[in-house]
Amino acid sequence: MPDVIVVGAGHNGLVTAALLARRGLSVTVLEEKDVLGGACRTEHPFRAAPGLGVSTGAYLLGLMPPELLRELELDLPLKRRDPHYFLPTTGQRYLLFGSDERELKRQFLEFFSQADWEAHQAMNAELAALREDLAPAWLKPPLSVEETAERYIRPALRQHFVRLCRGTAREYLERFGYKSDLVKAMYAVTDAFSGLDGGYDTPGTGMNLLVHNMCRLPGSGGTWMIVGGGMGTVTQRIADVARKYGATLRTGAKVTSVRVDRGVVKGVVLENGEEVKASVVVSNGDPFRTLKLVDASALPEDYRAKVAAMAAPGTTMKVNLCLKGLPTFTCLPQDRGQFGPTIHLLPQEDDVLGALARGYQDTREGRLSEFPSIEWYIHTTVDPSLRDAEGHHNSALFVQWVPYALKGTTWEQEESRYVKHLLSICDRFAPGTSDLVRETFTLTPPKIEKYFGITHGHIHHVDNKLGFTDRLPYETPVQGLYFCSAGCHPAGSVIGAAGHNAANVVLQALGR
Image (cartoon, rainbow, N blue to C red):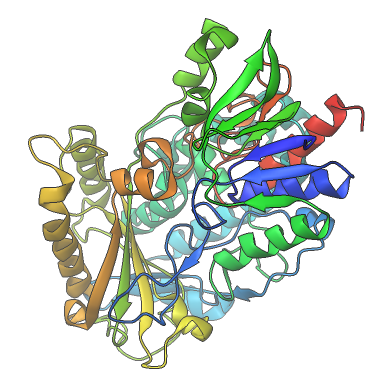
């Protein structure tokens, strides 16, 4: 009989298992799928190129605290993307964001304005200071936004921090005096909207923007990084640490119920009828799926209502691509490193922010947007280890926003057409891209739900509009039942801090 059962072998569950096992507890991880890693895995989904590896779900590592890497003695093959952002246009203008400040300034002044350059510098300087101040709070139990500001944030930035956490993307970005709506839209899309049910004027999008700027990995320079071998490397290496300290990791072991007797956890029951007893159960699953495993009478109604209120539909779509060559961008036909970064495809009209607002409204009303915001990746240019013998490139379109459920039609009817439409948008920036695509592996929100086992296909479980004490607590009203998932503090993404913090809560409860 193990001391602790961890339900789900996503990255947070594996972190919890590794840290508890390291402290001498007997830990069993039960994963329903046949593979470890949750949505953080490397796969080979293309029949036309079976040797081509791709991070099918999570695709970049940015937010994992370096302190956690050291605590786990985790050695990851991190690859910096330099440049890290590419903002193309269908004309001659572009921005290629990297460590070469002089060249970036030249592009800003030539293609945009001095005011945009100064706004870019001021905003990123402020975000760097907030990143430094806030870092220790991510590996501690959460406080309220105001208490966090008081304890961690330097006095000159406290008011800005609180406004950012509570406010909208518009309020934050407009503060810095950008002239170009295209540049503002790029920052809003990649930081404020990613994985979130919210638009430019939605309160809480500022919190998501802050979260996405908490990159502190070694050598990152504040940017998101590629992991050699794909994102499966992250979870496989954490699993190796867990095994090293004696944890048992079982795949194909679906938990169908958590046994509770008089308010106290007794263990779990598997789909095959097997009962595994333990006095502690930690769920790495999303909160809505997890609570379905617990008899309704075991949890107070107000707790269930509080958790249910955190639910939001998944609004992101991932189109994984097998390419037989690299695209050629109209604005930058020669290779200047523009294939490795996040490539931002945005509406080109003067009213780009209005176009994004219409895209979000379309999603709210169950329609597919004519021009959603698209982040485009071609990671094999930075990590060639994933290419096959024929030299194919992996690529992906990460699309905000799409509806979970379509009005008047279905995803089955629309998926193929919409993928072709998205590729036609790529063709506007890089003519001929569609002809380079050999195969696609598409994950709509319902497919994300089914494939990775995440309610409503919400990649962060709970919107990152909610932060700190507004997120899912690690403890539940049931003695011995805990959460360690992405819905907890600090945020959804491949971070591992929730797994770390949940492990500490369990150790404290056990007097360890």
